Image (cartoon, rainbow, N blue to C red; front, side, top):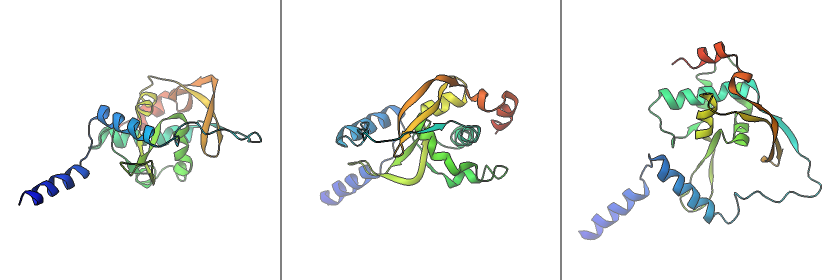
Length: 179
C-alpha cells in the first residue's frame, strides 16, 4: 500500500506546475548550467556573416498581443502559448506573426522548455518575458538592431535605442492595449 502511495506522490511531483516566477527562473538557470554550453554564445565561425535584424512595428504589435494574452487571460509569466493563438487576435493584421520568433533576439519572448533534465523546446510555443512586459509598458528601450548568425543574436547595435512608442504611435498603442 505504501509503495502505491509513494509512487503516486512521485508521479504528482513530475506533473507539478510552476507558478512562482522566482522558482521558475531558478529552475531555468539550473537547466542552463546542465545544458553543457548550449546557451553560452556559440563561437562565431571566422567566415560568418551577420544578418542585421531590426525590431519592427509588426514585431511590436505581435508583442502587444502576446502581452494582452498574458495580462488579460488567466495566464502567468511562466505560461507558454502557441504562436497560432495570436492569430485569433490579429485578424486585422494578416501575416503579422510571420517573424514573431525574432522577438527572442531581444529577450522579449522565450521558447517553451519541454524537458526537466535537458534543454529541449516545444516548437512554436513561447512565453512573454519580463523584458517583453517592460517594453510594452514603456519602462525600457531596446537596441533597434540585432546582429544574428544561425538564428542566434550575437550582438545588438546600442545606438539607436527605441521605445515601443517609436514603433507604434502612442494613440494606436493605447487602442491596441485595450482589453
